[in-house]
Length: 444
Image 1 (tube, rainbow, N blue to C red):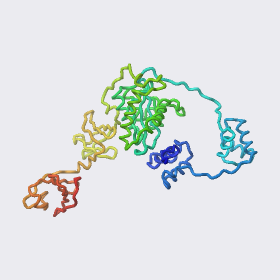
Image 2 (image 1 turned 135 degrees about the vertical axis):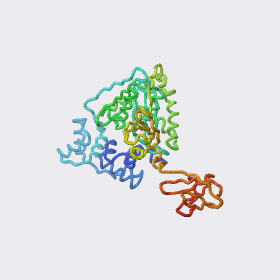
Image 3 (image 1 turned 45 degrees about the vertical axis):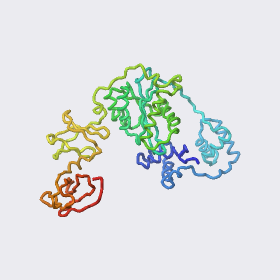
Image 4 (image 1 turned 90 degrees about the vertical axis):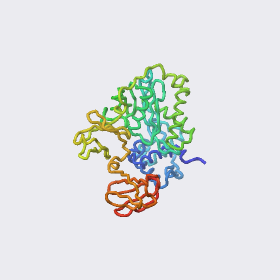
C-alpha cells in the first residue's frame, strides 16, 4: 500500500505547513515561498490541524458542468490569436467582451482538450554556462529546500561545492537553516581543504541582509578569512545551476536508497555517499570523470589566525558589582578585579569567551547555568555515632545506620540537602530540625 508521504504534492505542502507549526515562518512568508495565495496556505494549515497529513490531499471537486460549444470556440480563438495568453487572461476577456463567466480551470481544460494549453513566451533568453579555471577559485553554497524524511522529520541540507571540479567540499543535514549552521560547516571546510578565493551564495538572510552588503555575520567571517562573498541575482536561478543540480541529484540518488533512524544516522550515510560521489561518480559535465579527478594540482591557501576569533561574533559588556556580566540572558562570572570595567565577549555556537584587553579571562559553555553554580555550596561532614550531623550550629538526625560515613551537604540558595558519599541512593532534605527522607533517586 502506497504511503501518503510518498505523494510529491503532500511532501511539498507539508514542508511549508510544518514551518508554520514550528513558528519558523508566518503564513504570509510560507505562501510567498510556495508561490500560492495567502488564503491557500491558510487552508492547508487549517486542514492539517484538523485532519493531519490527510488534510493536505486535494479534495474532489465533483463532476464538471458541460460547456457550450460556442464558448469553447471563443476560448480557443483567444488563445490562437495571442499564444502568450494564460487561462486567467482568457477567462477575464470572456467576461469583459462576451459576458461569459467560467472558471480559469475550465478554460485550461478546454485548451488542454484542444491541444492548445501551451504558453509561448515572447523572448527566450540564452544562458551560457560558466566554470572557474582551477579548484578553490570559487565555492558555491546554499540551503536545499526543506524536505520531510521518514524517521528524521523536517531537515535542511547545507552544502559547499567547488565550482571547477564539482567536488563536494562538505555537506550536512540540519534541523534549521541558521547562519551558525552555514558557518559551522564552513569552519570544517576551510580546515580540511583550505580557503577559496570567493563564495557564491543566494540572498537568503543567513548570507545577506536586506540593508545591503556587509551587515551579516557570514560576510564578516568571509572578510576575516580573505574570501569575497558573491550573491546571486534575484530572479536568476540559473546562476545557482550547479548547486541546484547537485541538490536534485541527492534527492534522486541518495535519499530514496536508504532508511534513516535519526539525524545522526542520516548524516553518517550521507558522508559515505559524498565519498562515493567525489571519488567514483561518473560526472557527465566532466566527460565521465569523477570530481576528485579535477580537484587536484593546486596549493590550497592556508588559514592564518585563531579560527574561533575569526568565526565568533564580538560584543562588549560591563562587569557588574557582583563580578558578573549578563550575556544573551545568561550570567557569567568575571574576575572581581575587573568590576566596573568593560570586557569583550566572543561567542560561536555554545562556546563563550571573555577577554579584558586581549587577555582571556575564561571559557564558558552557554548550555551551563553558571548563575546556579555560583549559588551552590558543597560541605563535607561525618555522621557521628548517634547518627547526627552538625551543620551551622544545627543538629540533623541522619540515622545511626550511617554513622562514620561522610555526607556532602549541598546548599542551593536556602535549601539544604545531604548526599551520601558512598553513592547510596537515599536522599535527605534537611529542614530546620529533623532530616526527612524525600525519595530514592540516582540522579543526585
